[in-house]
Amino acid sequence: MTIQKIHHVAYRCKDAKETVEWYQKYLDMDFVLAIAENEVPSTKEPDPYMHIFMDAGSGNILAFFELPNSPEMGRDENTPKWCQHIAFQVGSVEELMEAKGKLEADGIEVVGPTDHTIFQSIYFYDPSGHRLELAANTGTPDMSKKLDDVKWDMLDEWSKTKRAPEHAKWMHEKEFND
Image 1 (cartoon, one colour):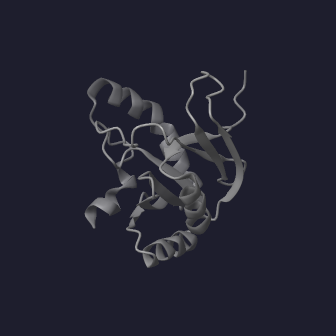
Image 2: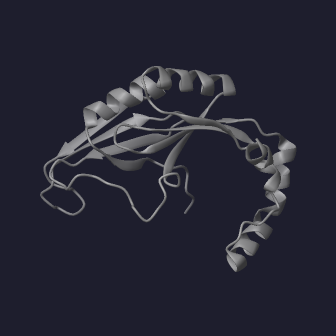
């Protein structure tokens, strides 16, 4: 078997229509498909849902389920808010900053840009509380090679110590020194 790509990634949303309109307005994603049933096809559970699919570019699909009969949605309280997020790549730092301006103009709080050296990011939340990231690549082939050369050493050290290895500390030196 060879994985070709991610077919879609699915999350829960509070309101399917609001979600479609928000992702169209702020992330320019096209609404490509809606599936709705009163019974779950895989489990046969009587649980109505609306399953919406958004075009995240380059064949990537982001999907959401609205589940009106389930308890109010929450998040994994044992995981920090910053950890679980969906990151989308944009074409340039200029596009990143344009998106930041658009979001902030409508009162959406944005963190960043954060300089990760190989990319810059902004962070914000959608109407369902999902943390989103927009990232613009800024790395060089040399940076990629340096990171590729140390990835296994870093993973092995982390596995033994559960402390951040310093092989790639250079990535965030500027961010932490500012």
